[in-house]
Image (cartoon, rainbow, N blue to C red; front, top):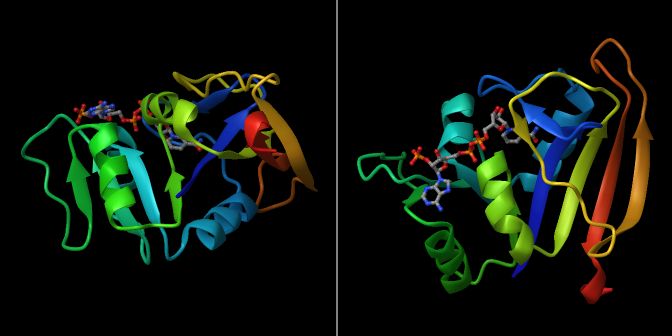
Length: 167
Ligand SMILES: NC(=O)c1ccc[n+]([C@@H]2O[C@H](COP(=O)([O-])OP(=O)(O)OC[C@H]3O[C@@H](n4cnc5c(N)ncnc54)[C@H](OP(=O)(O)O)[C@@H]3O)[C@@H](O)[C@H]2O)c1
C-alpha cells in the first residue's frame, strides 16, 4: 500500500488557524480533488469538524478518542492511527491519502512513502504547522509553478517528494 501525505503549507510551515484553512486556492483544491477522488482518506477529528461532512466520492476515515463519534455509512471512525492503517491493509487498498491536520501528519510522516505538498508563497499567522521536511529523508522529484490570479490568492508550487530510501 502506498501512503501519501497531501498538504498545503506556507513558507513558514503554517497549515491552518482557528481550525480553518487560511487561503483561497481554487487550483489547489482542484488538484486535491483530482488526486483523492475514489480513494480512502485519513484525517484527524478536528480536520473532519472543519470540513463538516465526508468529502464526496471518497471513503473517509476519521481518527478520534471520542467513542461516540459516528460517521455516515461507508465511512469509518478509528481510535488510533495504527488501527486505521490496519483497516486499509486488510482491505488491500493500493493508495491511501493522509489529509491532515498537523497531529495526524506528525503520526503519518514516519510511515508514508510520498509527500504531495502545495508550497504556498505566504508567511501567514497560524496555530498549526507541518513538520520541517528533512532533506536527508526526502527528495524532491517534481515541482510545478502556479501563478496567483482572481481564484488563487497566492502563487504556489505543487511539489512531490519521495522518501530517499525508496528511490
Ligand atoms: N493546509 C492543509 O493542507 C491542511 C489539511 C488538513 C487540516 N488543516 C488544518 O489543520 C488544523 C487541524 O489540525 P490539528 O492538528 O489541530 O487537528 P487534526 O490532526 O485534524 O485532529 C486532531 C484530533 O485527532 C484525534 N487524534 C489525533 N491523534 C490521535 C490518536 N493517535 N488516537 C486517537 N485520536 C487521535 C484527536 O481527536 P479527539 O480530540 O476527537 O479525540 C485530536 O484532537 C485546522 O486548522 C485545519 O484547517 C490544514
